[in-house]
Image (cartoon, rainbow, N blue to C red; front, side):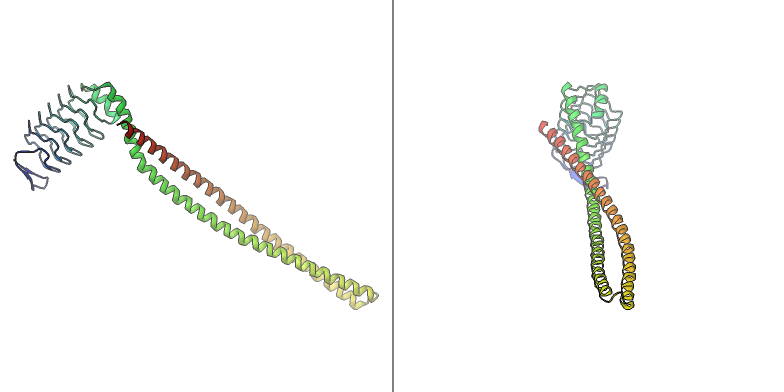
Length: 298
């Protein structure tokens, strides 16, 4: 027997197909009835319209194989792996799929009359279809497949949740960086405000000291014109400085208030993103528990 792949290249010659590597082989419309293909690697192979009645596929790998319209009447598919295989319009009348893995397989319009699915793994949504199609199904398999669909869903979710964690971590890190930046800005504004207050207090103390000296001079000179003029000048300058510092302090207070507002917003955003990250991690861990629980049962 000579077997070619989809490109027309010869990939196998001989009569013993047990354990053969026929991955991606083109076996469409081939007559392999009663052939022994046990333990063979048949992933991605094209069996469309093939005659496979009573063929032995026990423990073979048929992942992603195209079995559309194939005749598998009485075929032995015990413990075969048929993940995401396309079996639409195939004839599985009386076929043995005990312990086979058909998660993700396409079973639309398949003839399942008398087929045995005891211990097989199926997508949960395919269970009623298989049962209503006349296949022989152990009652216990329904519970197993409930767990199986949960397992498949959990595995699919695992990748999604990991992406959510990565996204949440990026958003949290951005929020934390923004918080650090706002904290740094706020510290600078606070320090600037504190400097203005210190300068204002220093100037006030200096003026108070100068004012006391000027008043003393006025008293000692019996209110001479020059002493009074000096006192008036100190008071005028003092009033002008007080007005200036009040304006500066008011401006700095506004800046400080605005800075505090932005800082509080940044803190709230950082808290929200931290909560999202914690939630994503919790969901991921819960999903891991589901996967571990299923694996402990099979």
